[in-house]
Image 1 (spheres, one colour):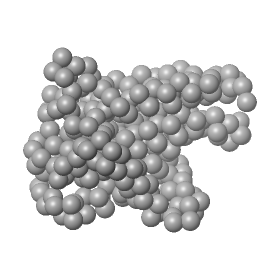
Image 2 (cartoon, rainbow, N blue to C red; image 1 turned 180 degrees about the vertical axis):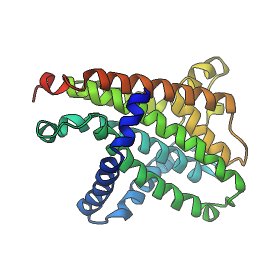
Image 3 (cartoon, rainbow, N blue to C red; image 1 turned 45 degrees about the vertical axis):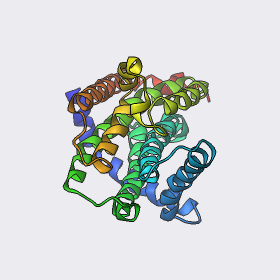
Length: 260
């Protein structure tokens, strides 16, 4: 693991410049540029808000902020992991010419998506007073929560990038799994609605813990459950270690095993 961290440090300039290039490239591909990064979660929230308030009658005074925090966190998670899963396969032509560590490509993809998320999240927090929520000092507690989510995203991105490279059909399974996970993460409903008998299983999902932690800080002005956050951090760390070890073991053989 120490060797892998050293390798990340050795290639930090490549990671940095590829990340910056990726951010600029994505902005150029969309007519609205960086503004689209913020409009996308707003549109998703508008759809959910209409469906859950006008159709089912659910809602509440903070429901717009509640949905925005959930949909934005989920979009960061799903968008990053999905894109990273295909990142090595998509760079096959580059990799046969340059012998680069394979972890660089999912990492850069996640960092590009994370930049979009953090910019959008900062704007969202700045607009909270318009939704009737005054900023408070607890916003600083968002930093470790979001870092844990970044670790969780990378922890899933590394092994999935490896296995999707070996079998592109896994993307179908991954898509279905994320669809199910969305409804098990409390994105559109309050965790208080989860039956007591299912609470342990619900909080076994790190995304449920992370989304609720952000809502605790922003909406309820309270410190999130530290035991659950420690669990989510442990899962993220375990996935990171396993994912990096898998990529290390397969690094030199991976290109020979790809069927393009």
